[in-house]
Image (cartoon, rainbow, N blue to C red; front, side, top):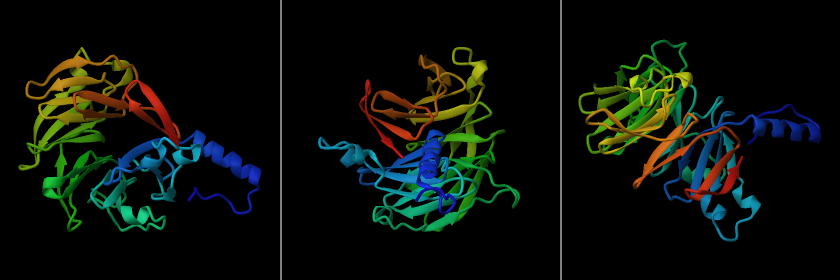
Length: 296
């Protein structure tokens, strides 16, 4: 479903509208289906597009294979974050998170399964939800964003069980240390905060921008992405993309990447990053070569 346009628009004007829409499109979020064969991507128009990775990666793939198999209107505003469970695709935008059944999405007849809104301070507050994080051992979901808090939701009951407070500005990203279990959060205040989920308390704070080797004052102090692997963390944003040893709170490697980073993850012994605004999702079959792009 494309974004609503007036009825009886001449074909030429419709094509111009769609071209302008793609030109000004930003893809904020992505999530892979439980089977690993499909990729969902959410944009600033509230749309979610689902691509067939197996078709796009096939040796017989055509240009049409890189287009969405289904596109639907999920939110009124941007789709800031998404995550997949074994059955559901969860998406979040301004103030609420929604659930969709993957099986129904792929039948091209999906309907919203449920929606939840964290308990905000006032009924007039509608902050964006920038990050979603699954905690499998607790069967819970952590949401964070514009109200500067981390909210924990029980996925079985849909109830919000706690709120973690400490950030002084809105939160951009979350990462899970499963062994601990602990959650890391990074925000506009320039801090990465480490939370113990057993006690619901903050146990460590790293103010990244205060470390000279990774500080970039001209870009600001905000933390836009982070990932963790045992005792290691990588984070970036305003400060340079940097690898940290968590136990000692020490930056060990500053990566020579100029642009502020929006996504980062660990893969084996590699650090993968992505950034940029467009209507395309770039697909890399190896780290040095962009194989092709998926397009809304």
